[in-house]
Length: 256
Length: 256
Image (cartoon, rainbow over all chains, first blue to last red; front, top):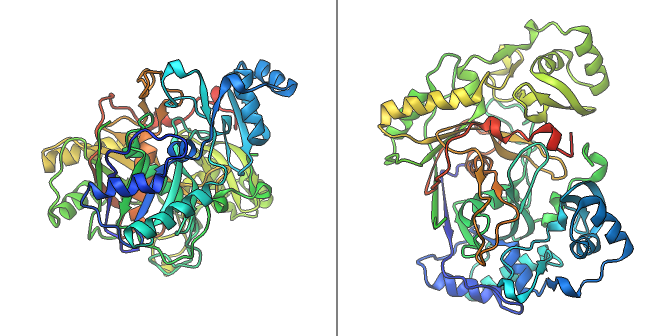
């Protein structure tokens, strides 16, 4: 816990990502333009959007045929029925709704607005309307990126795939982790004594989420120009876990 | 938005804080031991706990007489009735409960577990059990700290008073801002076009919360030894607002 300094660097010059692009290569190319030498327990945070685009999770809205269920929800929420069709496809159930917003339990378990489907920064307006879905398996995307970096940089780093979520009770979005590899998603501090030798009360820290929030300060909300951030200075001794671990057990959740 | 680097430094050697201590002076003394020269738009993040202790918000539990209402809630939640008395005193209402946890709407508006009342790191066991309440007005605490730093360092910085909150849906705590001064609590990006000139969809970022989360990575959960962090590299052009702004309007909140 004796970490005294963190340094966050946004990787420069990552181009607009197209379906099929090799994100591991784009990141290695960017690192080569900097003086960064990756070390173990450095963490690479990558915005979900470029992972999704590289993985081809971009859907032309004019190809989407909304089913009756989607039309019903669209009427209830005053949303585009084609977008609602995609939201329902990506979700287990609708948790809350109001005009303009559907809060769903995503198939990955995350409770989030509009199943994380994004319409900004997809491409020029004249290409028609597109939507970007979350990566199929963000934990796997993170693991592949980690493997790619091991090959190109010769070192094992932690990887976080991040997104920006709205939150209950608090205005404003915050960066969160939807995929992790090579690091713990949560830091379980239970059993570690406080300064006076008592066991800690609040004891599990949302490590990967805090990392994603920190990186978000550099990425900005609408800026695809800075979609990857290296964080150095973190240390951990807990085993690696996936971001799936962050999903709170519904039986223990007082707000579902 | 062209920020490429952030640096976070935990201030060294801040001693155990006692009621009446001058936090501004403790921080100035610590800065003097480092090579840090504060610049405008640097942000100082300070853990709520040391602010509360300095402001004397420490209560000896054996002086607390639980009222009948507190005894009822204590029976329902299997908690110490004296602690429940303090939780109710600090809260507008109980939002959810289960054994061991009361989620309340704090008098400051924040929805949080146990009214943010902490029992760890208060003092040696032989001093008896104590509880630490949140600062009376954390935004004012932040403003006073900003004024103190202006006097000692000759520069206006942003100040965040941070705490660690559990969250609905996601396991693990994350640093959040409960007080701010000299900076925007939220960054409203509405109206700023994305890379393709479309207006951004998700558009208000939880700036101060993301700052608190980033600082929390250095502070650790149980470590009062690193209760203050300087962040440099942030920029903003929006006007200053208080952390009170972060409380979501209950009428707009789908999870109350």
